[in-house]
Length: 92
Image 1: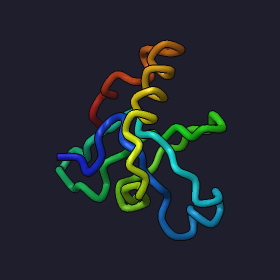
Image 2 (image 1 turned 60 degrees about the vertical axis):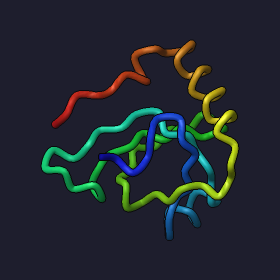
Image 3 (image 1 turned 90 degrees about the vertical axis):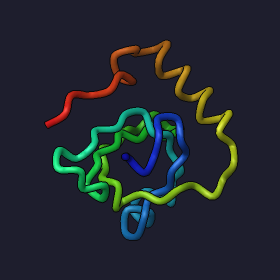
Image 4 (image 1 turned 135 degrees about the vertical axis):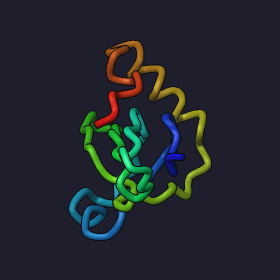
């Protein structure tokens, strides 16, 4: 089972946080690892400035912000602009 759900707010870990200004993003898709290694689940994260990054679970941490409604609003905006980007992506 993936650590993060679509619509959840997450933060970048370590060096990535430094490179990207400790940005908080919204999970827009999840691809579980084919052998069930949770640390290697792949996530697509959308940031407020419209950047999107593909990251593995070990590169993310739960956001300390309790604003799930903001994440849901962002997810709805993504769905309205590109419905196929939110669908569950095929497994490798």
